[in-house]
Image (cartoon, one colour):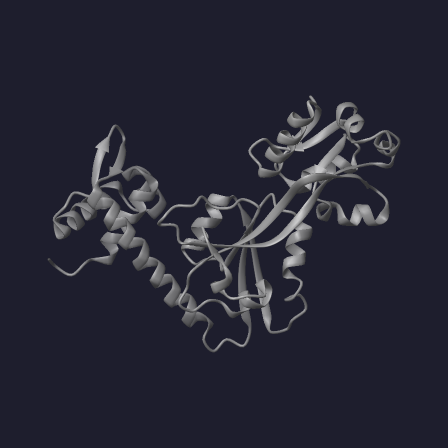
Length: 298
């Protein structure tokens, strides 16, 4: 077999991720025919078909799945090599953080606190969806992902998950809600309009289980998947919010909002997700307070 052409392998990897030649060509900014020709050349080099066509989509064969696994390892190592030597000789250290777009800003600032104000450190903070940030982590464009959604577990998962904080969850509302809260948790839950996280969140699942056990049908005023929006809705007195107090820390401190009840047995977990690296960013140990050996594979 001839020496493996890494350009062909890169085109194959892009096509496997995009699912069609057209999408891969668009993502790579080259012609569809060029992508097709070079994938065929790779298949000839390897001696196996890497895709089978199903309608308009390309689906990996067994050989294709094996090739993609090796391709991911090859290009991950390439990114790691580049990232490592870009940092060599630099006077300032850089920590690249990806944060779920809906994550509490107060929590993010708390995580960054050990690095804030240091002249020798630059922090690059990117936000996005879980899927987008996991791809960035795989490609080593970020060093760590902050999230409250634990990545799915499987035997081949490359992720290391460290639970770095567990926050209580409370009912939070304006001063006008205090009198109703004084009548008890059940009265508040059955009478007040509620501002809730959206149903796909873990926090909402815990809340729904609690009220089902209590036999309560809530009055839902609003739902949001963004902690910042839950905070704004609570501040506008749209209802009583189900929210971790850390999200509204400033409002609780200045009396704009009040913690009416802490909800029993409901917590919000915050996680730092990394991948195993030969040369881990040393700043991670400072902000996490531990080494990768303390992390749990997920």
